[in-house]
Amino acid sequence: MIYSKKICLCGLMLLLICQYSFAQLPEDALRLSWNTPSGTARQQAIGGAIGSLGGEISAVFVNPAGLGMYKNSEFVISPGFRFLKNNTGFRGTDVSGSTTGNFNLGTSGLVAAFTNENGSSNAFSIAVNQTSSFKNNLYYQGQNDYSSFSEQFAEEFANSGLSINDAINSSAVSYGTRMALYSYLIDTATINGTNKIIAMPEKAGLLNQQNSINSRGSITEIAFAYAGNFSSLRKWYFGGTLGIPIVVYKHEQTFVETDATGNTNNDFASMIYQESYSSSGFGLNFKAGAIFKAADNLQFGASIISPSGLFLKDHISSSMITNTENYAHVISISSTQLDAGSGFSANQVKYILNTNWKFLLSGSYIFGGGEQNIKQQKGFITADIGWITNRTMKYSGDVDENGNSTVPNGYFDGVNSAIKSIYKNSFDVHVGGELKFNLFAARLGFAYYTNPNKQGELKTNRMYFSGGVGYRNKGMFIDLTYVESIANDINFPYRLSDKSNTYATIKQTAGTILVTVGFKLL
Image 1 (cartoon, rainbow, N blue to C red):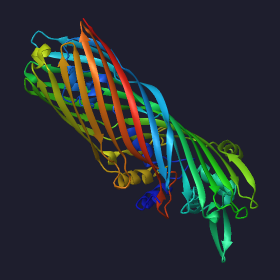
Image 2 (image 1 turned 135 degrees about the vertical axis):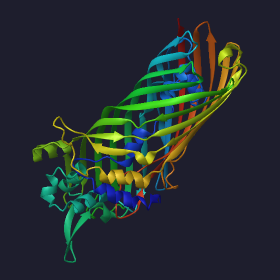
Image 3 (image 1 turned 180 degrees about the vertical axis):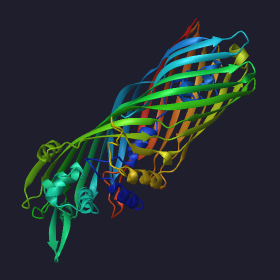
Image 4 (image 1 turned 120 degrees about the vertical axis):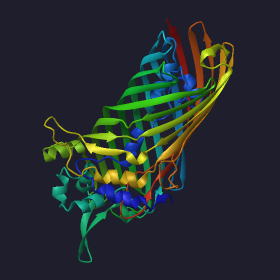
């Protein structure tokens, strides 16, 4: 049995925000904040450790000061292909998933570089980068004698204080709970003289559960960056980036719960819940950094990446089919039917999500010639370490054209408290190196992202192993990289406040092939 005791507190806080048709969850914030490594093929081949190196367009998204080392302008494009596979475990049942693949775009764009008469230099860049890919197929199943998917709806109804009819027609109750009431998945009953709320699947005692989630979308960031050094500070390079992330996320979920006892007279046979959810919007963020050349072959870097202020709009539609045998037989209902019956639509919400801060320190040692003798360089070793403030992720209400909040006061208090309760600040480390052989180069890298969850049993971490080759000659360069990743993750099918929460474990392996082609411009 896999469950988490402390998440009961999170479940209680999340019940406080069950208004309108749906509410955001802590994992929604983490999904949009915890970006996957991305960049050019060269950057990914060295583990993403680009924070103290220069002359690489990926610096726009890591430490923009690196642009200041450009001496020539260039154009870069970085297409790639990613494939992944999930192996899941849920209540003692392991499932090996199928392989999913999709094309993506690493850092691509234009760098315009200028060298001044006094020897100082500066550069401007317009770049685009896919910082996250949400393409994934997740499936798990198992038998559960501890809790039911329906209990979350019984809890919300109990906390609403409404009658059944009022709850079915209320915008303050989620679609799931309204459908559960309509289809008699949950109901009220008098037991020993006391009126209680009952969830029909609990009568079965042993349930087969399966959850299928197919997601797609990405975060693609457009960035404008400037960097340079000055004649009075020749060993220092400074840079800044304005980023515009564009978010598109969609998922289709089907959760099935059936009676595993074989009893055909216990008021529950099956329940199928289907959900279509989308979230889209855009935001702003800022990056600022510096690189210091301590010696001709030794460089240090530091950068700050601000939270992205994301202006998002979510949309949801759902349906439920319940078979309660002789209790109410088979009933189907959808969110569209609920909206038609109540006379209002509650399937959309607008809000703002502020993601996490990131602080980065970097160092590089260059073999052979330094910046002034690039052709004599034999390679380098480099490392970055980042600190990520996951506990500062925060939801807030958007405002309409009249300056009024689009959600009631306190709507996000529960989930913001849950974020601070569940998550901790985390680290990521990147190390890599390159060896040059005249026109060719060979590269290796490694990256590790630590667990953002406070509870050690909730394992969510990532490792990346990478290698690549490069070719440079006469103003053109081609880089080829392969990145293998191993990630541990978790998925909560539902959350409850009165008992421990069960969850699925996910072991994901993925591979990315990335090619970067670039041209030096006069």
